[in-house]
Length: 151
Image (cartoon, rainbow, N blue to C red; front, side, top):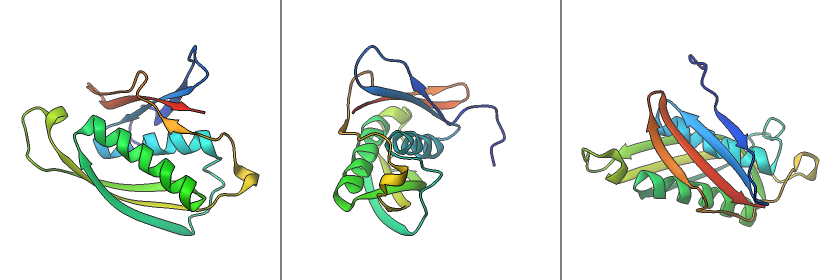
């Protein structure tokens, strides 16, 4: 249950042919979940996707690289397994507890729920996550990311 007025994500108006979104989270875990929801809201109507299939995986890296890798891996699974995801469970653990969180190594464990891709709730094909304007930062409300996808 949300306790703040902060949005999960919003789509951005770009001058390119790509699509962009800004995602938010009080914690890094919430930001990663909301970024995945934004990505799959481009791909499909996530509110219609049943949670019949599950994929679990782990990856590690610094927060910015990890967010990029997380979204890229989700896109790879979606393409290779022909699955749409609608729910994401994410656990992040800091490895070294560096003073600067941006330079620390994190381990992400994820369980992603969804179902086989169905044209009835398909929207836009996303080809790749790009590095164009890609950013992850801490704000006074938590965390914020900007992601642009190639469609």
